[in-house]
Amino acid sequence: MHIFRHLKRLVTDWFLCGMLLATLLAYFFPRFGATGGAMHAEWVINIGIFVVFFLHGINLSGEQIRHGLKNVRLHLMVQGFTFVVFPLIWLASDWLLGSHVPPLLMLGFFYLCALPSTISSSVALTGSAGGNVPAAILNASLSSVLGIFLTPLLVSFVVGSGAGGIDLGSTLLDLCLMLLLPLVLGQFLRRWLGAFFARYKRYTSIIDKLVILLLVYAAFCNSMVSGIWREQGNGVLLSAVLGSAVLLAIILWLTTRTARALRFSNPDEIAAVFCASKKSLAAGVPMAALIFGNNPGLGLILLPIMIYHPLQLIVCSILAERYASRQRAQAASKREAMVSAR
Image (cartoon, rainbow, N blue to C red):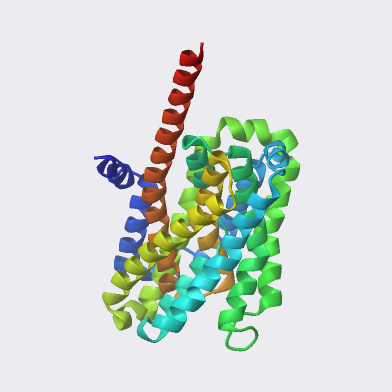
């Protein structure tokens, strides 16, 4: 019954329903949101990306980050999984299955593996499961900043740089201007505007998600106009779903086993598993627009992260509930032991 409750939550999540609506609108009205269309997507995207990362910066608490700096082993594990283990899993998958998967979808899986961790859902799930919240905040925030530099660098290893690939220098400059600059600006202005934005955090979160939906719509519009979906067929969607599910299962098993092998406390294990297994759609969609530009295959490249995102929310919500139940049972047994000792 637990899984049906989580599925119901997923169905009623307006943001996930919005992603489905964005892809349907792109199918029926592709030219409106495509590059050069009436929506002027190129301008809307740039402004939207700047706003999103400014809001991330202004809502990021420096005090909580400083409080989470203590556990170095935990931080190394999370960042190692995020930017090393995920890409290594992709390399093994590409060696085994690369010839059977469309190249753009395989690139989409690598882009998923190269992305930073989430902030909001990692922290929320860690908190609900009784985990180490300050460590989760630190790792998710650090991952987002590192991703500005490491994600395009990792992508350049696969697609190359310069002619035929991505211009790494130009891409990094764009990412710094569109992602890092507003993030730093938001942190700088937090002293004066932080309390104001905290009061209206619910609305800033809505703005964040609406910008992502616009980016998804524009990406799929360009893919529809180019005809790339007609060329690929429906099998690509099934491959993306299966690949995302298998990847999530592997990474959750590996992170859990690694945390226990390192003898982490239960709160640290929870933070490690949730931060090291998650990938950020909120950072992934804007970064893809900057890294891949007007690539007509952008919709296909984004497909794995769009599927992985709801999957990770369902599975990790179930895991969070199990962790919380275990914590409650342990606390109850300790209380009983103390009472009997008296």
